[in-house]
Length: 109
Image 1: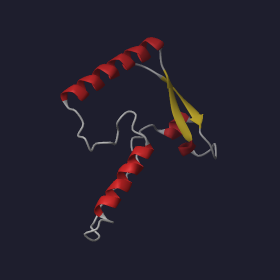
Image 2 (image 1 turned 60 degrees about the vertical axis):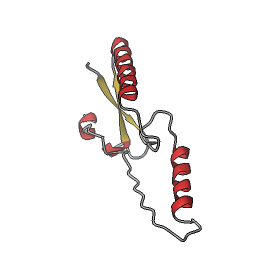
Image 3 (image 1 turned 180 degrees about the horizontal axis):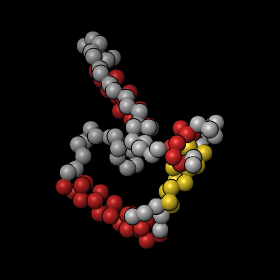
Image 4 (image 1 turned 120 degrees about the vertical axis):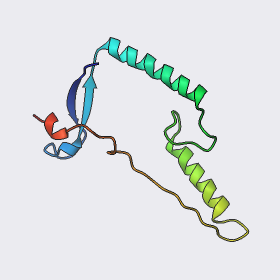
């Protein structure tokens, strides 16, 4: 699959390469094939390896409000319970640039 990658300025300074988002333009047939293949793989994964009931991250349809409700419930259950305060450890990871492998400086030229 081959795509034409075009830089699109999100906001801010146009000379800062971090302010650009890479937009890939590909053929309609390629997009259709990718969509069908993705649906097959997601269905196979969900049938073969279903998510645990407490898994919420990286699930289609899971919104930020779902995560906030889960955290609020955990805090109420483990920290502010009637037996005395417990301990709750949580981890927040920002993946906004973790998987950004596009050389943004090369997009400007």
